[in-house]
Image: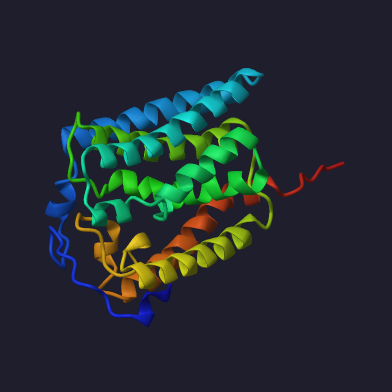
Length: 254
């Protein structure tokens, strides 16, 4: 949100300034589609079992997934150090991208089942992280560690969101969208200040990612930031819509 306070830096993009159906179709590689299908299958199984066979096992499963998420993120830092990453790469490895923050939020939500953390996991995971799965900013390929880590971490957030809300029934509260919008704006403001001080590009507030993403359809800087914010709020409302209906009191006819 604070990106309008400073000019964007030059960041080359693989697909340039325009996106065509051909560039989006280039994401439909076997390894990418396979990873998405694997995430969908595992998530569906977790949610289905959680709904049909609730019990003490769900606490163990949720905490096991939390450990996997944290291990994936910490493993990424270890990988960067072990591979002698340069200072710039280490700077971008800090957990300030929305997806990285969502990894830790979802891990805490799985472990402690705090309602606010569950709501952040649900809205950030399905409105943001799932887009990162479909249009990954990932140059590495299977079976490299970065490839596996990327999909385990991002897929784990989506699995956590659906398991907690759909599988285990922790629905968002009536005022959840208002709180999540406020928290997201505050987080974006904090990250914007961090970008201004460090010269980083967390949340892509200074430039779009180098790979093809939905941001390429939203115009140049800084307009894509405003469009992304509006679309984000719209997605929050859409994600909350089923529960808005379910929260309505049932009218009994006498």
